[in-house]
Image 1 (cartoon, helix red, strand yellow):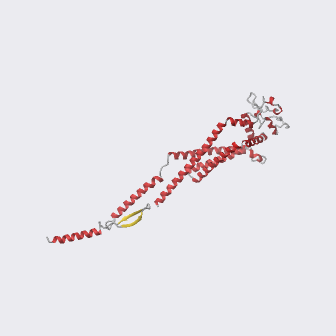
Image 2: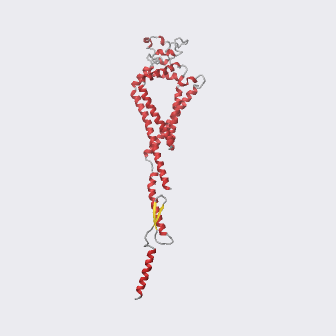
Image 3: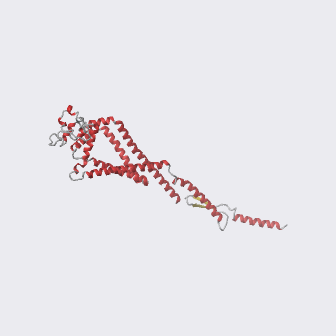
Length: 347
């Protein structure tokens, strides 16, 4: 048994060298290595093995878990589905702007058709185009169509430039309408004078412009009035002037008559002949004596509640449109910011 101490010393010497070169060697940090997500991961020397399989497997597991955790952090924020309210607001904005675009185009076509049909651009009529109501239809139709088309395409394509332009235009229109309402309320006397001048201009061109004739007849028939302030205002028209040579001299249009059909079905164009020569007592059974400006004032006072309601609804629709546009812009900006963060995380 004398050989046992020598064998034991040899066994422990081999084992000790194996431990020093292998498994029980202290873990030494190799350094910081950047992984694919841009974070630092410390790797260590493992068991001395020529193939390095254990070190590679531990490193790959560590990188895989880090990549999975990074995906869980960023993926839901970038590709999160929008709520139903976002979709409803977006497509409601598209639908409303599409409808207003069609309405604007129809108004534009009607205005252009009226101008072309009446040959308003002819040399002898170009001087009076400024008072042509069809020009107002054309302008309003063009503005409405362009503005609504901008909002529709911007919402459909999620174009921030078009949406900003649309929201700025709607905000400007809101400010103009509020300012106009304040001016109308504070400058009522001046507005009456403007209306008087406009109606007198329409009376002067009554026979020359079919649109002005139609509008004047509708106002006088609907409000049961005649002239601007009184029925004698029709003397400013060259055909109804008492010095005119025609049969309509000292007369008024048939729309001033109390019963222009005279219990029949055909419009009697001669019912107002000679009405300016009558005294008020005799004329009141044939024509309306009061002017249209007074009738308009009384109509506004009588329907003030309806007018205020319509104005509030129109302003509310525009404010709602502005809110939807602003919400859509904020949503697009947030999605793009999250997408940029996600792309930076992949670098």
